Amino acid sequence: MTITSGAVRSRTDLCSAIENELTGLIGKRASAATAYGPQFARLWGLAGQNVLGGKFVRPLLLMETYDALPQRSDAGNREPGRRETAISIAAAIELLHYAFLLHDDVIDGDLVRRGHPNLIGSLLAEAGATARPDGGLHWAQTGGILMGDMLLAATHQAFARADLPHELRLRLLDLLEHTINETVAGEQLDVGLGDGIIAPDLETILVMCGYKTATYTFELPLRAAAALAGADFAVETALATAGRHLGLAFQLQDDLLSTFGDPRRHGKDPFSDLREGKETAIIAHARTTSTWPHIQPYFGRPGLDGDDGEHVRRHLTDCGAEAFVQGLIEEQLEAFNHQLTSTIPHGARNVLLDLAGQLEGRQA
Image 1 (cartoon, helix red, strand yellow):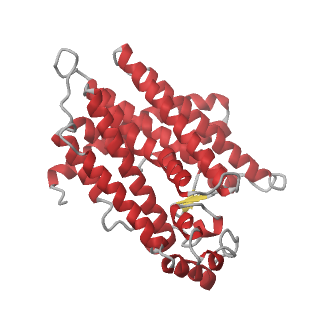
Image 2 (spheres, one colour):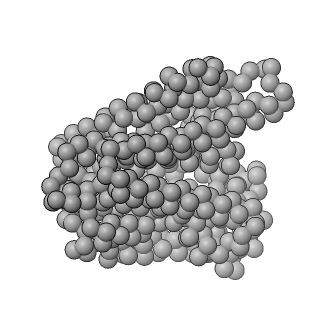
Image 3 (tube, helix red, strand yellow):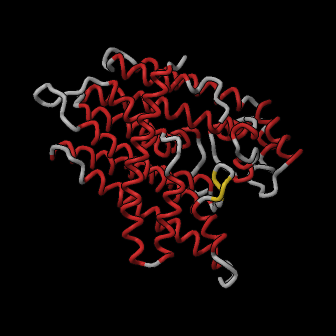
């Protein structure tokens, strides 16, 4: 899809509005944090550096869908000031996203994100030589947990204080709670699969992907946009269902890129998922084939690299795992397209089609 200069300006303006809102949300809390000492204030400083200037995938999806939907109040008129409130909710969802990333980084033991130190990596580097053995890492990971907790609280505050009718505010708060429940459940499933506590069957892996990725990346922004615009519940449900299929397609493609993609483009260690022993749909399919005995000895090996890594990737392709997951992606996109019925207004449909179009040729 060709993006017109007007569309580029519109997205740039949206990013600026979202960033301004985030600056206010974080700046207010960073200022208050100074009363508790420089180490506590540093958490907010690092959070601000990481949150601001991001891609804003979720808040942009919310706002572009909101702007594309016919907006009305119960009286059938546009609510004054509602768009500003929508931007506040969109910014809060970006805080929620970063809270989840911080907790993920602690769980996974990650110190780097997109080639740069994450908040935990930065705190570790600043810990200094006076820390006890492993004390620096414990300090840094504790900072990640605590900052994630504070961002979750800030997200709830933003939703609870939104200038909205009481019933709509409660509806959004219920949606937020549902989203957090599903995302946490997905994280628990992910860890249980990786640690061998939960059987790694394909159905469980797809449920985990839906909970961890589709719910808060696609369903939450789409449902919030519909609610804020005063759309019928049928429209909200249709948007959410379409978003869930699209979210699964994106996650499945992420897994493909991580295993078979060009690391120079996606910026991730080419064998990290295999080295970690990450249970994906790729691995679920491979387990069902006669090739699995050639893969299993290497799967989850901490030092997997070079020729051994290429050996595993080659066998995953030969056993049909790559093609199988590509087929799953096509199934999700077919279900997504089927959902784009007349229930979803034309403008919102175009937003989703534009997003789906980004899957084609995606390398990162």
